[in-house]
Image (cartoon, rainbow over all chains, first blue to last red; front, side, top):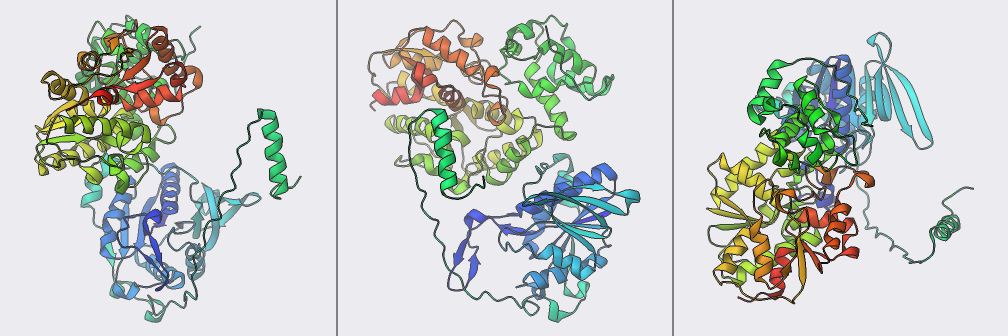
Length: 265
Length: 374
């Protein structure tokens, strides 16, 4: 089984500002990090590989400065790393990003299972994983919190976290899944792999190596336009300090929750 | 009735692993006398039996109770055969990182240290927040190493400010690393991740060299121990705890002053006392400040652990297994007005055990600073 984990390097959510004029994120001064949900995706893939065998490759798209982050993924346990890097890929929205990633997959040895995080902390659309599945015409499941091998190695069983419960679906391989953020605790760097991770070759694919239709790439292939942006201020918290017994407090809290209509009784 | 701990690992002899372990810890000298078990502060409240833990290690088996250990070193201090039992526990924990059988939450702790340089999951840019209005000369070869807790924890920040105030009063030229400071690595070592610990020692060594640091004064005894042990391999700077540095300043008359006349009892932090043998400087500081010292029965090398060492600060501890409340009761039993100590973890644990409702908990530097003049 060959698993490919799509990982994005994002600015730290707490360190970015929104530029209201350009309608873009101002990343100046923000440190970068591997997207949180993608770390959960990597853990999902590594745990599956550890249990059933196979290999795990990490795939990312971005500037050459992202390479050290992919080396972290190698130190954590990934077997190989591939970076799609070319100015032609820049300015991509979710459509162009998913096209680029899907186009790269056959060029890097294909994948039986593509594992993504549910969404990126900077874009936050959740559109890329299903879009990759569409470009590949592969099975897909979103918001997965657990996978186990299915019969004969031709399927995986994916448990999805839905708003009103869990759902387990059987996916015929090849398949694309998106993993719920926080669904596992990503393993830490294995320092025994550090030397390997630092010396391993990160395969870089540019436009020439990728091929593909240039009109689907980068800014040109991105129909998304940010039409408007406004600042939403957090509503102030309504604080109330009540000194009563624990039992009375429980009834007060229940009554308050019912009053604001958050509980169906 | 001793509750036997269960392990998923089948019993097997692993001579090679045992030899490697014995070479660094003297664990092969253990003749199973059980003195360690009797000395262990967890023996009363948990199934932890140190002697059995060592015996299991001889059979290549890791006792799952290793994660409860606070690395307080009461066992080391009591062992008649000179076995480094704390080293053994750290080694066994290290093996568990290889097999990924570590308690939940510890990988997340280490990710935070790796990417933020601190144990609090807070941005490095906030690391100098402890300074507030404190002025630092910013020159000289002496470095005040603040550490994660005194940098980020509002309670422990007061200790850092007090030490800086006293250094300033004494006219000591010193620098701080501010937002460039990174974790000393003690948290990583205590939970058994030697890789990250070594990485942080290297990063600190590079920073010390770049700044021309010849002497490091630490706030936390944990930083003191980790940097003193860790930096020795790089031929690094002299590392002292703030109680040692302040004792010199008070002795040489560079800082004088007395505080309101009260009685105080002193709690020896494990990493300052048992691990590094610093027992007298904090006591002398308290007495030179005009306080009357009354000792708890368990003092100096017999001090009772607060429960915060060995990575326990980042793991859940059953309230019935927490040794901190026992120590607070012992302190209150002396009749002293105050409980003073010299470790941010101890203060944090005692205060979370509602120690201050029984006896006010304070820090040695804060007491000295409250009455000091230059």
